[in-house]
Every structure is written in structure tokens, then in C-alpha cells.
Length: 588
Image (cartoon, rainbow, N blue to C red; front, side, top):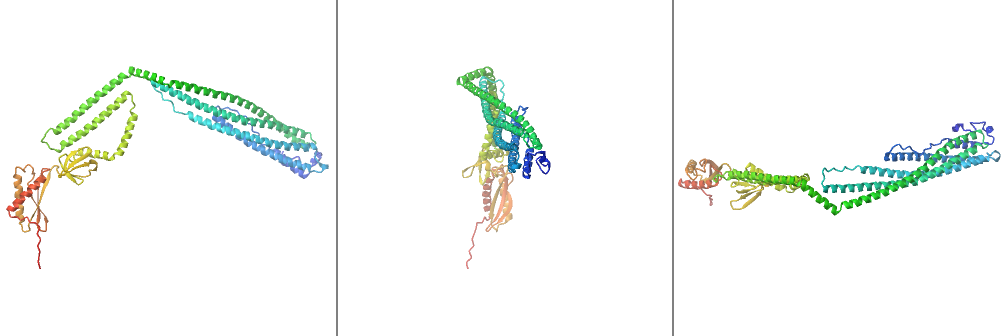
């Protein structure tokens, strides 16, 4: 029935007064009756907390319960609003009926029915608050339980235990201890889950007890609603009044049946929760006893006596099955080490013997070969020892992978910490390989000149003519001037007077050069005779001329000194003036 077709509306039902003579209405009463009937017609949907649990997954069950509790909360809010409107509109209608004059007043039983209805609405509102408290409590418990279950499922996804093939007694005991520790951890985790489950059940028991109480009260209130409707059916309110309460009676009867069944189901579920709590507490006691038993077994298995027996059994088994294999392997590695060192030593000795075979051979290759052979011997010997050591560890059963990784990291750290040393070694190796200079040669390195006395993989030792010994790190050498490599030029610069005949000077110089070329003491040193080169400078008091000769490396300095001496004697004999600086003073 819609508000426009209300049986209590005088305008739409002009014959209502004749149909219901006991309920003489006024416009105020009609308006209040229309509002009350309209509010009654908007009945919310009744949501039950009973659910069909078809899934076995605890996460899905808990999530489904949360959705149902959310729907129940929304439904109860609607029912609370519904009974608030019933209380408000019923009170308004009751007040309007009481305000009708005494000669037109409604029957007392109608007034009593409306008063009972408004009181019922107030009790319904109060009972909805109990529903809300119970649902909120259970929602919090379900959310906590859902979080705990999801966390425990995540923790169960652990890495599988690695298998060990043919373990020895020592390893078997170790694996047994690890298995016991893992079992204890699993039992403790399950115990923690059981404690969480007990807490969840206890919280649900508390919320369901309140919920069952609210359901029982709601069932009693629904019965009151039905009783009120049935009493109003027999009241002297007319046919329309009776029809309305017939509808209320029919709906109330259905509501009584549903709420009573849900209250019975809630009470049964509450009893099952109490049984579940007892079983869960028993399971907690079992977990405690299991953890204690595993702890005792772990303590016995991890005793010193047990480890000693496992160690003795392992050593005995090792000697019986593996010791002879390891012994043969180590002997083979030792023999291979000795043979490799002998072959390497023989090879290096041959290289050095060839370099030192001819005492009269002063070529640069001798020192370079000896130095490279010495460096090669040291590096190769270290490499042979390292390889032999790693093979021996593999034979014994030591995993060399982590060792090689650690050595690589250590080598990287050392290379960063000793970059200068690495640079010296690398540069020294290329100096030797490229034969940039050798022992006995005269060089100029970084402004320091002298004779090379020693070349190592890290540094070069240079002796100056003053006797000073310069030790130069190879990493700092960027430019080398070698004065004794392949061939050399012996220059000679000498000044003659401006009055000298240069043709005669040229003739004397070339004659002295030819004489030196024929001299037995210098003919093996000279590759070309000293000869006139030309005028190099016109000085203040002399003309500087140059003569030069190509000679063997290292003899240029002695050749220059000898040439200077012979030219001085030849110029004196030829009356060629070698001037010296003069100062002319003019007096006024």
C-alpha cells in the first residue's frame, strides 16, 4: 500500500468515516497516520549471519566472514533508522489521536496499541546497539586472525633443505641436529598459530555471546510485534485499520520465524565454539609437550659424547674408504710439482747459460735475457706452487671456490692499495721486454745521467760519474735518453782567430782525422774518420768550427777528448791562432 492510497487518508477515502465509525479522524490524525504507514511500508532487508562454508581455505573463509559482517552492519543500520522512524511517526500519531476531542476520540485499545508500538520501537533501537557492538568485536577478531593466517602462510614458504649424498657419521649427526632444530621451530610456529587461534576463538565467543543475546532479545521483540499486531486486528478501528495490521501480523510472523531460527543457530554455533576452544587448548598442550620432547632429544643428540662417537666413526670410515685415494692424489701432485720445477729450472738455466756463454760478448741482450729469465722463474714458481696447493685441497675435499673468490677480492683490494707498485712492475716488465736500455749503458732518465748498474722488475739503478747512485722507480720513467745504443757521434768544437785561413784550418782538421783513422788504437773505435763539418758560430773573439766522427757507442767521450788534444797540437804546429777573450780600452 502506498502513502497516496492510505486507508487513513480522509481526502483519498471520503467514505472512511462511515467504514470506521470508531476511529473519527481529523486532518492532523490523517496526516500523522499517513506518515506512520509510509515509514512502516519501507521495511529493510533482513540479513542473516548464517553462511554456507563450501571453501576449505582459511583465508577465503575469513574474507567471506568479513563480507557477511559488513553486510550485516549495513542492514542493522537500516533497521535502526527504520525503528527510529517508527518511534517518531508512531509517537506523532499517538499524540494526534490523544488531541482529538473526547466525543471523537479513538478507542482506548488503539491508543494502547500505538503506545506499545512506540515502546517496541525504542527497545528495537536499543537492541540494534547490541548488534553493532557484537559485530564490531567479531570484525576486529576476524581481521586480526586473517592477518595472522596470511603471515603464517608466508613464513611456511621456506627454502628446501639441501640433500647430502652419502653423508658420513659426523654429517649424519649434524643433519639430524639440524632436522631437530627445524622441527622445534615448526612446532613453535604452530604453537604460536594455535595461541593466535585460541585468542581468536575467545574473542569470537565474547562477540557471539553478545550476538546471541541480541538475537534472543530480537526474537522476543519480534514476538511482541506480532502480539501487538494481532491485538490491533481485533480493535474497533475499521476495515482498513484491520487490513494494515493484518499485513503487519503476516510480516511479523515471518520475522519471528527467521529471527528465532537464527537465534537457535547462534546458540548452537556458540556451543560449537566452546567445544572448538577446548580442542584448540588441547592442541596447544600437545604442541608444548612436542616441543619439550624435541628439546630433550636435541640436548641428548648434541652432547659431547655423541659428537665424539660421530667423530671417531667418521675418521674410521674416512681411513677405510678415502684416505688411500687422498694419499695417492697428494703423492701424484707432489711428483708433478717436482717435475715442473725441475723442467722450469732447466729451461731458465739454459737461457742464463746462453746469455753468459761468451765472456767477450757485451751485447745488450745478455742482461735483458738474464733479467727476464729471473723474473719468469719467480713468477712461474709461485704459480706452480699455487696450482699444486689448490689441487691438493681439492683432493682432500676442501671447496676451493670460496677461497678463489676471497683471493680475487683480496687481489683487487691490494691492487687498489698499491697502485704505484703495480705501475712500477708493469712499466719495468715492458722496459725489459722492449730492451729500452741495459746494464752498462749510459742513460739520462728524468734529468739524472749515469751508467746503468742494475735493472729489476721494480726499479732502475743509475751510477753518476760523481759516484752518486740513483734508484729510480720504473713507474716514474716516462722518457729515456740512451747515449750508448747502436752507434754514436763524437763532436768537437774549437775556436780560431778571425785572421785565420779557414781553408787551411779545414785541411789541418781533415788531416788530423785521417791520422786518427789510421791509428791502431782508434781504428776499431771509429766508423768514419773525424772530418770538418763547418763553422757553427761567429763569436766575440773567435770563429767556432765543428768537426765530428761516427764511432762505436760509449767511446764518443774519449774520442772527443783525444780529438781536442790532437787538434790543439796540430793548430800550434800550423801557426793557427786559438784566441782567448780580449778587452780593448780606448783612452780619450
